[in-house]
Length: 123
Image (cartoon, rainbow, N blue to C red):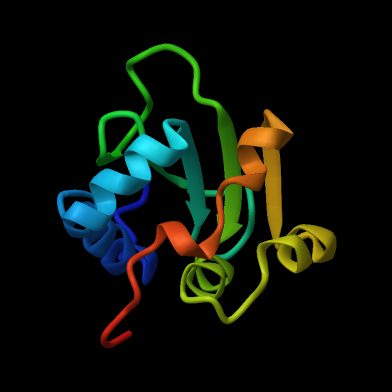
């Protein structure tokens, strides 16, 4: 796997902080799902970096999920993930345009909204 620095790394770091806050704890109680997010530097399916956003435990980790099966898997290019996470692109529009691929439960995927991301102070 390439050691590429992704713009998404900063968002995932903020997400870790966010999930440890009170607002993050509310999210884990409300959603209670596990998402796998594959982020590719340039082209979907190539040199992807995998993140697990565990909204059962309130954790964000890099690498494969060890606790069984994830509820939904998303694949993005780095730039598109940043747009969705910061609210600059609607997730439904991203899906329709092919900027986001989804595997797994569609009902779980629909709960994956920009609201689960911390509001970036500086991105």
